[in-house]
Image 1: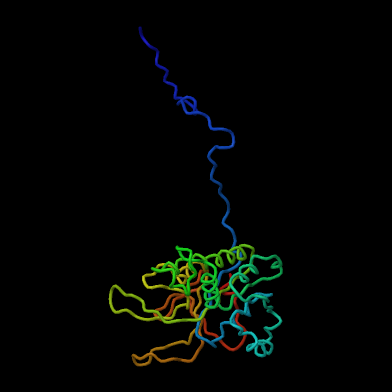
Image 2 (image 1 turned 60 degrees about the vertical axis):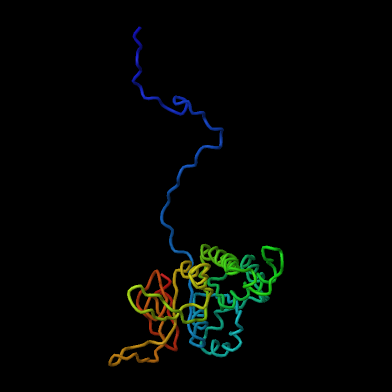
Length: 282
């Protein structure tokens, strides 16, 4: 007996014996959309003490709301008023610890603010560490005396994860259209060079354990759109480095500093007058 072969290609799940999934469990389809315009910018501004980081942050589009964790504004208030920046800023009151910082950022009432400044992230990290030591026991359920008490670098991992909560809530503000700024103190770090001698450079003073694991510094560099170093310009004179005394904002990686920007590559000389952020915030 000759069998007739049907050359039609089976269609659908049932043709292959695959049961139809229950309603509402079908695999979702990918969605495509247009590239979104830049909302708020994420900025990390760092440099040595007294070089003008806070003053620069106060000149961002306002109203500017500042978490003055280092208590620098009372010292700067007369200068800011004389330069006309005081009317652009307001402080966030009642923030004395890590929990209060996160609670304030998660609260309502930010709709009229255009820029949020955490001054400084270096101090915020210390507040984060103090909160962890006070509230997070070790694996044995015991209270620890300091971040080292968790053993084998585990405390640094805990702190990196906890600090990520700050970056996450600042992300939400940036998506809502606000600029968010972490002001940092600086430090000097050795950079490994596989092709020659190591060298040292300026970097933000944030947790950076040896080996690179649990590095809040690396997390912030990856998170921000602009990592801006404020320092003094250095020029070569007969083969020797010579400082010119010109305050400069560095927007890209240099041998002497960690920096980056999504919109600028050139170094920007700074004056005592107003700073125009529009070249960066574009």
